[in-house]
Amino acid sequence: MLGRFAAGALGVLSALTLPTVASSSPASADDGRSGFTEWVLEQRAVLDADYLAEGPPSGAQATPNNGRTGPFPGQVIPGISGAVDNGDGTFWGLPDNGFGAKTNSADFLLRLYLMKPRWETAKGGAGAIDVERFISLRDPDNKITFPIVNGATPERLLTGADFDVESVVPMKDGSFWIGEEFGPFLLHVDASGKLQAAPVPFVGGKSPQNPLLAPGEAPVVRQSRGFEAVAASSDGRYLYPIVEGQLFTDSQAKRRWIYQFDTKTSTYTGKTWAYETDLDTNVIGDAAFVDGKRIWLIERDDFDEPGR
Image 1 (spheres, rainbow, N blue to C red):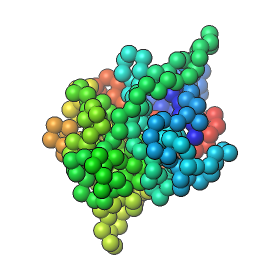
Image 2 (cartoon, rainbow, N blue to C red; image 1 turned 180 degrees about the vertical axis):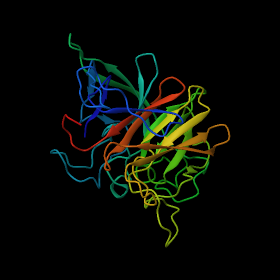
Image 3 (spheres, rainbow, N blue to C red; image 1 turned 90 degrees about the vertical axis):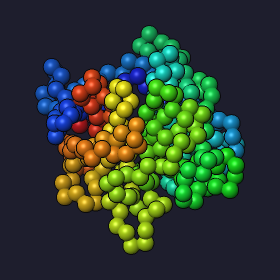
Image 4 (spheres, rainbow, N blue to C red; image 1 turned 30 degrees about the vertical axis):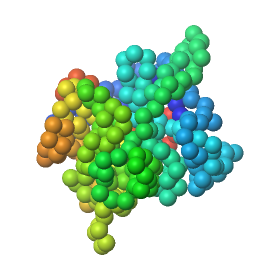
């Protein structure tokens, strides 16, 4: 378990110009491979793997790993799936759903943590992260229609067994839109973390872990391949949730679908774009608008090595 922020990272980035079907970033001058560019890590800061935030014990069902065995006397931060740069030296960090599965994360509380990195650069620096405070994702107004772990409590704090949160987009009113994978759903919470409306279901279908999947209904989204990435227009009017992997119903193994969602009406507009990955097995890790016309996508593989 290791939570970390970094200002840059070695990786493969691909650019998509809407509504172009697909394109790639240009290769750097010293890189002969078309479609790839090199990135240099300039700053880094790390949150200690043993850091515990206040709250009830967590990890009772977690698989022992790296010499650690739960339950832990507080809430762990096992990694950051989504981050928001506040422009003042702080970030909102959104951890994943806990311990890697719906079945072992019922005691992991979904939160946004306000973090302040003390960057380490080539010239030195602490390379540490200060956790200043958090907001808890919760549903006290009973917007969620299906059972949740803490459904019988007044606050109805959301857990990693309820949603697999992956991506976060801030709004100008202080609220957040969050993309998740169990539905997949889009969640809208206010600045305090309170759910503002029922989770918005994906217009393209359900995953095997969707709590509303009917008996005998075939899932369309593969498990853990929901909204890993959500981009937003500069004015916040439109979100662009991106399905991380190939849909069960899609014959094209490299195709990843991008959808347009209207935050004003909380509905999908019907506009879609298709992006083609480099390899069949590659997935979409993150995305962001860069100039109002183009979305930069982080395309991820599992090779864990340089060269692709």
